[in-house]
Amino acid sequence: MAIPNVKRFRPFCPTCNDSFTVMAVLPREANVDAYLNDAVSRHDHKAFTDAKSAMNKVRVGQQKQQKKK
Ligand SMILES: [Zn+2]
Image (cartoon, rainbow, N blue to C red; front, side, top):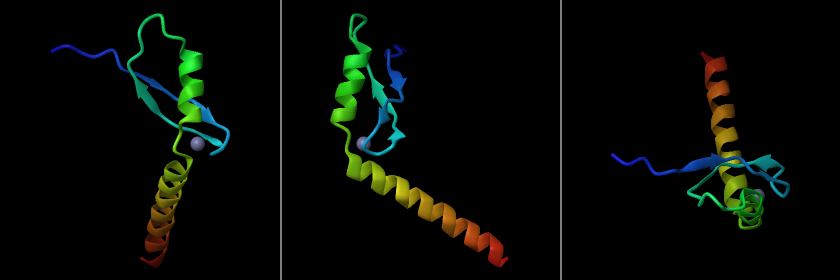
């Protein structure tokens, strides 16, 4: 089974004020910094922020449920 040379990157998005995960297969000669700059510029800030706030809501909900018991 061939394992694709997928790498995980965690570029920081100043718009979201958080870092996000990018999975990419880059050629060996690729400029990683340029790729990550491009990834940040193409980042879907709204979807990322929505997903993050949805995750926080679940956490808060779980905490409230635990306190009730
Ligand atoms: Zn962003």
